[in-house]
Image (cartoon, rainbow, N blue to C red; front, top):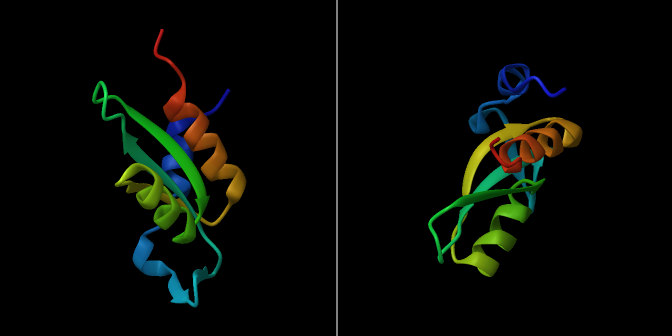
Length: 87
């Protein structure tokens, strides 16, 4: 069971990483919100920050950084939790 509050506590401030080339130091992984143009619903993707952000902006016309993590596993878990259909 994923503890969403625990994941939120592990998220870092984007200003705590430094851009070096196309990636950050230390390496960081973003969770990005993308709005579905057809119905306005949000879905989430993750990846190396900020490269993945630029890819999503190019593909979808926009994306918003929601959370930033030092752990790829945390970013993946957060994305899965946010994309999980509500019961």
